[in-house]
Amino acid sequence: MNKRNEVPVEKNQTLVVEIEDLTYEGLGVAKVEGYPLFVENALPGEKIDMLVLKTGKQFGYGKVQTLLEKSDDRVLETDDMLLRTGIAPLQHLKYDKQLAFKEEQVRRAVERGAKLSGVEILPTIGMAHPEAYRNKAQIPVRKVAEALTTGFFRKNSHDLIPMENFYIQDPKIDDAVKIVRDIMRSYQVKPYNERDNTGNLRHIIVRRGHYSHEMMIVLVTRTGKLFQYEKMVEDITAALPEVVSIIQNINPESTNVILGKESRLLFGENYVTDTLLGKKYHISSHSFYQVNTVQAEILYQKALEFAALKPTDIVIDAYSGIGTISLALADQVKQVYGVEVIKEAVQDAKLNALVNEVENVTFEKGTAEVVMKKWQAADIRANVLVVDPPRKGLAPEFIAAALEMKPERFVYISCNPATFARDVKLLVAGGYQLQKVQPVDMFPQTAHIETVALLTRK
Ligand code: SAH
Image (cartoon, protein in one colour):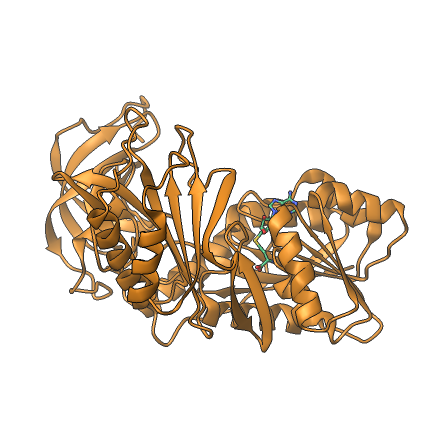
């Protein structure tokens, strides 16, 4: 920025700038006298005629008016809707460059966030076919041009853009969304209206087992009523023979949270099953399950490799979900303890242990930070700790309890490099060494980054 700390550009001004970098969200960064402006659909090395959209004290936002010089890394055939909705915000960047971008983001997190140098950051493991990978879709339903419509929200808004091809989802899921939408139309179901919390159908959720091809449909409604639901079920199952579960979830609140507390089974079972690394899993509607099955198998294999398991090992799998990591490693060790906060997921995990005839695992419901402390007090001495927390990372109490337990190996699976770096800094201060970090691309065409890392005790 200039010396007087003034913002050097004004809203609605146009100017020619060069893009210097990409943010962690995949936005292009242009600098005017040191003042950064973030620009959608602009790549490093590109020269653009930019319109200034917004200015703040520290940074602003701009928009490409004209692309004056294109980057060689640019994909020319892109779908504007995918960029504008944030479904595929990196679609304009060639896939090998997406992988390099993610590796670089991880390197920055480790070097600048955790303040560590010389750590081995491995090249991102990508997909051979980086599209049509999602096994789950949560599609909003709104009224557009008088009709019940499915699509996706424009970025930073709740304006629904009608869409049928979501590109990164299993195409069978795209088809199912269209079919269910048409059936809902035929029964004159009222689409949800967010402004005054009226109407009924809020979301259509579809989950499809990558290997099993079993499908679950969740209709999220505002009220408990779903007039003629028996007939709807008949129509859905007739049109979609893969469906094994139809659930109505009721969410009366005026909220961005998709699922409500109450669910009703309309057809079939409460879960779908699928296999992962040769084991069978029951997955119920409230449970977390990695959305990219092919890459999840690679990620878990890396986690197992990093854990370097021995038959005498005692392992804690924190944030265990439906037990996928616990059960993947149980055969190689003496005992596994899993902890997970969602009740349904713990029930799934217990059932999954039973179904796969794995006897040396126990799953506990609770927050990882509380249960970890309890285990530590009960003198459970895990020598291997595997964690897979949500985006907000590990709680300080969890790290404190882990440092007291002193496991030899600490495998950290993270979906957020920023909180990963924050936590690693504490672990390193507590006597661990970060050995290596392996990014695995679970979310091609998006800026999301998943990594698995190994820390060992000094
Ligand atoms: N390891 C599993 C799940 C990882 S996702 C898998 O790979 O499938 C993270 C999980 O942590 C979710 O199931 C979420 O419900 C759970 N979770 C979130 N906060 C938690 C907390 N404080 N304590 C325990 N589990 C938590």
